[in-house]
Length: 243
Image (cartoon, rainbow, N blue to C red; front, side, top):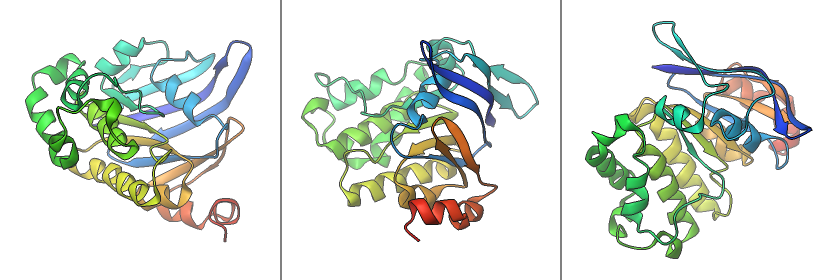
């Protein structure tokens, strides 16, 4: 049981600030969509949560059910993984010359996940039967949709509590986008995961989101209270859903 809370976050690259005063809340067991078109800071925020980019100011915390907190703001990527945060990066970032099963096994980096490696491997194969069929195939020879399945499965191998999914629809055919988003939506129910999904496909993202945020030029332009509030917002309907 864990909640991801980001407050007043500023971050960027060198002298360039990309995120400006970003505050978001991802409640325990919910799927929250971070919506925005390319170049507005979605991936920068994901990398900041994962420790790949350090915040200039602000806080990133995991809040436990007992009221305790884990400060991720200055933690290393390894420490963040050990705290139970896993990321499915944009572009998948697989090991192309390793097999499907080898890529999945490498996902069990977190110490707590090593004891449940076999169980998590079986879950990944159940979630994506195609991976089981192709477990000895080299990852680099797979289709884009299969690679996205593998990237998600690899993240789940760390037995995470918080899952960050960055642009899962990129490069996929529409039918595969729908299937992939649907699988992500299942995880909060079947695994109790707290999920933050960065996505530019608004129609698909709002299918599974419990609530959402719209990021524009590195700032939160709209924060919804719930799924209905997100779908009915005038900004969403006018600019992103073509209403």
